[in-house]
Image (cartoon, rainbow, N blue to C red; front, side, top):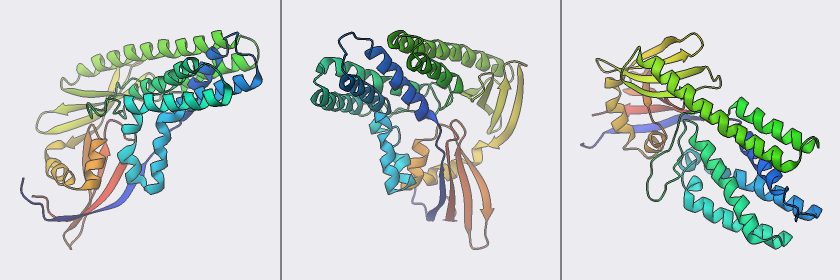
Length: 315
């Protein structure tokens, strides 16, 4: 591709945060409940150390939020990248367990086991949504996204919250309460797998070239993205209760490619596209001075969008 004579100015970047860290934190408390079931854990200091360790481990991957101090683009570039990779999480668990061992004197292997569980379950939950997680860095930059649950799933949070309440209220011992909570999350994700497959089957009755089935906060409602003839992409919604499929909009995908190629030659554009599984470009405004304002959205995650002013014409 030849040189592109355009100037790109990113007018506004939108990054929408969810309540997913509430879920991660509740997973940490469930792990603490399981660990505290060990009869050798006696003192208050030991119990506090275990709770702190599992709570911290469940949040460690999202420490990439510190990049917000350098701006939203820096955060978007780093989010769910190296910080969520297997090497980074094993290393962070090793360090966290060492600190906990120094503070409490508890067996290092015991602390490391629960620290690894904390970071590992965080990554698995991130796999379940549509945003994508680069856990295989440095071997691969592929973003793992299973499209099973939204970034914040109220049912999942409720299951974990009930387990925590059962424990702290004294109605149930901590270990069975924590185990049942995590088991409940596992069962719910299996239910979500079935709902995902069901939604895909219903949509395929209407369109054969299905690209993605995307979860929403309502378990019975799923969004989808599919190809249509003549260079069109359709975005729609399926209701599993009524089996009704509704088109939300038809987009001209064949007119987007020049803009996409242009964005890949810009640092910020490349960052945004790296996080976009199904990028869609919408022309918002054209001026007499030869500039255009476009909006780029990921049809899969819709967690972020960018408004971009381009002076010139893509070649």
